[in-house]
Length: 266
Image (cartoon, rainbow, N blue to C red; front, side, top):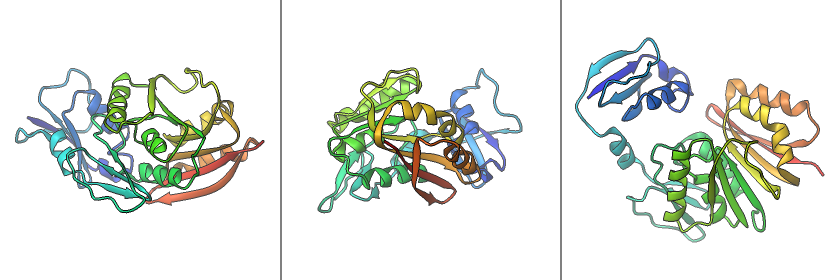
């Protein structure tokens, strides 16, 4: 097996989840990991597409890095939720509920700051009788968590059909009513409108999607928007200040990442 090492990529907080990592996955990497400040992609076969420039190749031991990564994952406790991979054994405290999750190639295990922010915000809402939409559902964790927390209906959208298959498998593993559909936000009809939107995306997308969020939500709806990198939060702050549909309830931060909770006016 060979590794493609991009030096100092890990200095960028987006490295392990952002465009560089995506380029390595898209090129057929068997695994992607941060080693110090380096980002490393592991390949069983030479990729047939271009890789990000500036990297170097090196020989490494033939190890199933994806399997090793999954085996190393532990359970994550966020409020009343415990997110755990299926190979782990967990002991629940009174009032806790478990979400069994195997992410596959999809983003969302509960370990990343943005996912924790979203889970905490969902757990802080009363979801009883409310319809929840997860935009960019990834592994399906947030929609499944919403179902666990009492939502009347929870569903997720994701552009990648393979990711949707992972989310559906995770829903089945949890006997969850959460459902998932492949498609882009704005391309799939949301009817009737939803009472809660949770979206773990990027600052640029949230700023662009504000009119779309307004179109798919009911008056009084809560929006939990995360994936906002610290140095890009002004994009969302400025976009919110320029409109009158949503009122900011709170900004919450975890490390280099922000979540903003906004509420649609009547």
